[in-house]
Each structure stands twice: as C-alpha cells, then as structure tokens.
View (cartoon, rainbow, N blue to C red):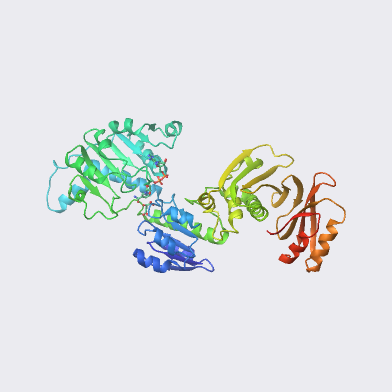
Length: 525
Ligand code: NAD
Ligand code: MLT
C-alpha cells in the first residue's frame, strides 16, 4: 500500500503508518495542483490537512486511490462529490482538535475584549498608552454561537465558566439538547440583536457560505465583537470590513479567511481586527491526536475494510458493523444473483428488511445490494459510489423495514423490476453468519450463495434431473448439490444445481433442447 502525505503531519502519525507491514509512506509537502496530479496515480491513500486542495482533476488522475484521510475536521478542501463518484472514501479525524479549537476561540474572545495583541504591539513600539486600550469585561455579556456542534459546545461550556450568557443558532439540534447544555436556542434573526460577542462554529457549506453579511450585521447591536475560528467565507469579509470601519462592529478576531492567506485583505490594515494564521488546531496535543487518529483509520480501512468517520459513507459503530457484516455479504450476493438471473434493463429495486434487521441502520446493506447488482456492468462500483451510480443510471431504489419476517428471524427481500420482468429473491442469515437464499420468485428453496450454479426453470416431470445430469456430464461438469423449489407436483419448478465448474455456452444450448426446460441460467457467486 502506498501512502502519500502532502501536509505537515505529526511524527507520531507518520511513525504509526511506517510501522505497518506492507506500507510505503512518502511525505511531500507544498505541492502545486499539477505536481499532485502527476504524482497521485500510484497511491492508495492520500493524507492531508487544510493546505492541500484535492480537486476534481486530482481525483481524476488518482487511478489507485481508495481513501483520502483528513487529519482534522474541515473537508471543504476536498471535492467530495468527485471522490464519491469514483468510490474513494473520504474520512476525517474530527475529535482530536476540538478542545484546541475551542480554547483558541476563547483566547481570541479575551484578546479581543482586552485589546491584548494591539497593546502588546504598541508597548513593543516603545509606547505607554493605557487609555487607548480600554477594554470590556466578558462577565455577564451574551455570547451568540452559530453552530452548536463539537467545538461550539466546548466554547459554550467555557464561556459559561466565564459567567457569560450563551445563546445559539443551529437548525440541526433540538431545543431540549441545547437546554441540557444551559444554552438558549434561537433563530438567527432572534439571536443577532441580543449578542455582545458572536462566534462562528459551522462547517463551510453551500448554506453557510456568506451566512453573515450586510443584512445580518444590520440586525446586530452597535459595538458587537465577532470571532471566526471555523472557516473563511462564512462571514462576508467586505461587509465585515465596512461595518468595522463604520464602528458598528467594535472588533473582529479571525483565524480563517475567504482567501486562504489574507495578504491582500484590507482587514489587515484595521486596528480593530486581530488575526491568527489558522492556528485553531495548532497545539502539540491536537496535532498528535489527529495524526494518530487518521493514521489508524487509514490503516484499518486499507487492511480490514473498517470505515470510521467517513463523510461520504453512512456512519456505523464498530459493534453494529460486526453485526451487519454477514448481512452485507448476503445483500451483495442477492444483488449479484438478481443481476445474473433477470432479463432487461433495471428500472427499480425494492428492498424490504424484515424482522430483527428492521432495527439496524440499513443504508450500508442497500449499498451492498446495489454494488452486487451493478458489479457486472460496472467494475468500478463499490460501497461508496453504488447509490450514485444507480441514480445516474435511472435505477430507483425503494427501501422499507418491517418487523414481520414470515418464517425467519431476519429476511432481506428484493424485487428487481426491469423493462422485461420482475424478479424476487429473498435471503436470510443462519447462525448469525451464513447467508442463505430461501426464495426465488414464488419458489421456496435453500442454498448458500457461493460458487458456480446452474439455475433452471422446468416442468416438474420424472426424468428431467437425469437429462440435465447427462448433458452436464458430457461437458465434464460435475454436480455437487441440488435444491428444488416447486409449488405443486407436475407444475413448474425452479432447481438450483451447485457445480464444481462452470458449464460452457454449448452445454447451455444443449440443455435448452430438453423439452421440459423453460429457462437456464449459469450463475457465479
Ligand atoms: P461539527 O460538525 O461538530 O459542528 C458543526 C455544527 O454546525 C453542527 O452542529 C451543525 O448542525 C451546525 N450547522 C451546520 N450548518 C449550519 C447552518 N447552516 N447554520 C447553523 N448551524 C449549522 O463541527 P466542529 O468539529 O464543531 O467544527 C466546526 C468548524 O470548525 C468547522 O468548520 C471546522 O472545519 C472548523 N475547525 C476549525 C479549526 C481551526 O483550526 N480554526 C479547527 C477545527 C475545526
Ligand atoms: C480543521 O478543520 O480541523 C482545522 O482547520 C484544523 C487544521 O487543519 O489545522
């Protein structure tokens, strides 16, 4: 496995990767897009922080890439859509730098309220000016937090320790959850006029880009102070500059900027602005943690297929992952079998999860099912891109759960509708680990879906099995097992022959000459 690291990563993480048998680790920091494009083709994993931009062109050039690991939280420097389409897992290490980012925010707020950086610079210039740097207490003031996630919450706790009143805006958390933290959850319009300090803690997304602009600033009190240690671009810098110049905003503390490095920004010229060069996570502790976290996650994924903190794959805990692994295999095989048995172009896949499965997070199972189904036509399909590839091909996926499982404790029931027919296949897992197919269309049967098979629909008459055996024997194909499903004697049946080797096309032609045989499919699972 070849691992490329293109941003500074703490030595502990580097060492963790280097110690892994079969891993070849290379670090190359400060690459331009073109240089990364020229280098990426050979690598299986790319590890970055915030400096490297993983663009669509980089992803297109990445022939072997399986995983992009972000040592930190923000993934706005990665083209996730392109990575997902290509089946590349994007994972971050979001927990390790939470405390550092929260502490930096509090430091920025206190520095802002007491003009510490400005006073420090003034004294170093040989001035002794106490009036100019009159500050304000944070005690008893209102702090507004936008984005009450990991960092927002830690900031809230620390601000409460400073005896501030904390209010927040976050449309994705409940009022009750906020109240448990002693935080009053408000709409943005309610929050803005109340706050003395405003701190941003959302990711940069299409909804948060430009979230704080002229209109929002006009709703704030005169003299408000703003801190942004989240992402540049959430506050519109033009509007911020105008409001600072007009004195509407008393001061701003920024760790992140619209343009990565703000050297051309007029904000640099304002005394009321204090700036740090993206230092929120720059502590020894945070860097050690995120480097170790991402190294371990990348190793676990490349070696054991375990996916943690993926931003383009549904989150599943390790306990749930252990439980659903046999079902992943079952779902994939059902999808695979459907694709090999059905005639025509798929239009809709309807999957029903029955019994104990109904209590699981089933999205990964549906992805496994689609992966199995598309893998014949699209070798590049994997768990990450399966849903996108199905959608792109106009295949509708309908997922339902029910506690009723007919005669089984768990059952995956799949109906594939094509422009020519509809095929139903049901499967279950026995003894917690062995996948079994228990139904094809209206026929109940039971076989383990692994190996080579001949699946026949034929009229249920004496001697048919013998005739099939004779044809297969004449092509040196040995039958190792037979399972049959029928509704009424003398009617139609479906028989599944397990084979030691796959029959050639001529054998299938000969089988179709047997008058009782209605349909034959050779299947490999
Ligand atoms: P998180 O995902 O735990 O929290 C983000 C919160 O924002 C969530 O609660 C979410 O519901 C909320 N949110 C999303 N969209 C919103 C919207 N439109 N309006 C209001 N709230 C919205 O993330 P986190 O780990 O707390 O990180 C927060 C930010 O800090 C991210 O942008 C991250 O990249 C950044 N960060 C910066 C540094 C740094 O060095 N300056 C370090 C770590 C993280
Ligand atoms: C993050 O999102 O984790 C931060 O921006 C920290 C960093 O990458 O240094």
